[in-house]
Length: 106
Length: 358
Image (cartoon, rainbow over all chains, first blue to last red):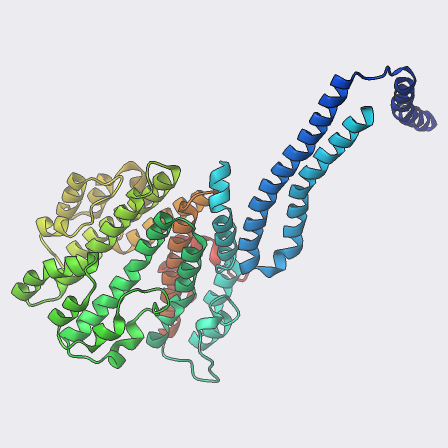
């Protein structure tokens, strides 16, 4: 059983180190971006945040109205309804993360 | 899908929440196992029907005064569903469904006028619909004759159809033509509202539910008019409602002429025939068809969720639950045994509701 433990450690190390090293390499070898690329990067980040916020807005509207419908009859469902509202709200956060990643590359 | 979700998301969630308040299998078990009517009513007071039950210490209230009051939760649900719908056309479908209760109250009003009874004498037979109904009930009850009553009705479908049936009433001297006119106008209104939905999924689902409901009603009316009233086949066909989906007028005509129950069942369309294949008694057909209808309504809830059919299916389900509950209470009042009661309740209660003690 001992060898199984070592293998697990090795695999974990691989998944942690490889992306870190590759990122480090990128920061070392990254060439300066052209103004055109920077412009498109900003536009992409804006679209990512805007579109995801719009999607989250629609999702919250749908989930929220449904939650209100259910809560008006069964107030004890409030906790569960909030979880689903949080999931809908999460869509905006995905967009924000993508935008931060894009901006990090510029 | 997205516009439908935006339009019916609230309604769908609300209706499902309302549906969760229906009597459960456990409730049915305890209601059936209750030793008498007061025990049954005491248990009922712990369910969603508690709001419409009067408080009592030892002697239970008379059942005939309770029956219509038990419809209060159903009628409140009608009001909630109507408020939850955004489009006027969608609201019309539920309002048309609700107007059957208005028609029932109108029938009681006409019968009271006919028999020279006061409002107080028949008040226990009236559905509590004042919070939704648009009819001028105070004016109608103040009238002194049937003619005056019909004149005071708004010129909508009820007013028009009763005016048209008035010569028949005068000629026959009985209320039957007026009552049939009200029944027909209810379903006419319902079809108008459903066709007003346009060629949408909404219309298809609502149309299928109502058409099946009409098919079942027609089948049961044919049996009732043939067995109980022994009317001739031509007259029976005249009293059936148009708009069924699987039972044609020709089929209804044949059904009205048949005397043997096996032949009657064989003449029915395949889906009904399958359901009734083991029935040997006329009295069992209604419960079996009710069970079939309940299965159909339950299927509506497992399909696409965002449409008005969800509300229609729920309200009809609740109506059947109410009629079963009243039957059960009546049997408790008459001291029927559990076995006798089960034989008179619909399939859902028989199969799932009561778990005999081992």
